Length: 292
Image (spheres, one colour):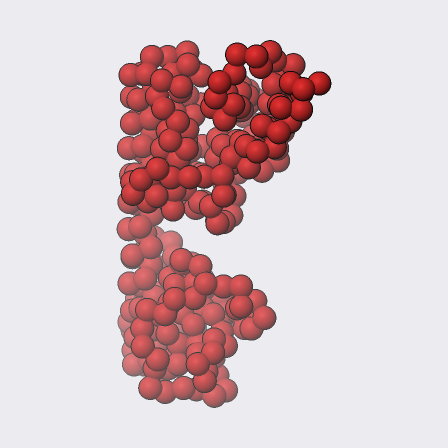
């Protein structure tokens, strides 16, 4: 009974971290919960008399469960539909980066892009990368989990890291290009440069009921006087500001270096939940009636 109580206390103390490990390993909250539950069933039947590092031991058990689930997913790919990339979110409090490089990596790890890349890694690469780079687990411990030497575990993590960093760089390049396109679009709109707008828009561009690049260009030509370039939840966009408050958010879809869709959101109640960072000064003209 005393041993069981001790185990309950240890599991409760480290459950947040265990959930975070499982989530980063599997990319699905539902599967992460299943993994932690399976880990509890395993540890509740184990002999804990020789356990000196409960946190490390519990992490090892959860990691092994996740590894088995990833292997099963590869064998039965049709069962992995629940492991699609999640929406961006704040870091789990169980994640504790150990240094500047880990902090930078962790900041990126909450995004969809990283989860997409992780899905392309094989199970042992994914485990080595997540445990070491996100949770600072040693390569000695990782090697024990995957039945490899510490050097082999280090190599797996390094290989995975290169792929993740490459994806992060590509993602940043895409964001920079999108910001350039949105900025150019706003400038062309304010200046009434119809030809420039047509060049920036895909021939089949869509704005609500307005269809076609030329029609969308005609709609915006000479307008957008009060729209400001901004990052909305980290994504380049435009925001119409009136009397210092956002009144409309313009969301842009980019494909093949052209704007294919523009969505105008005027739900002011939703704006309170958005992280808006303005990248341009307040326009001189502040239209009172037209968000464009």
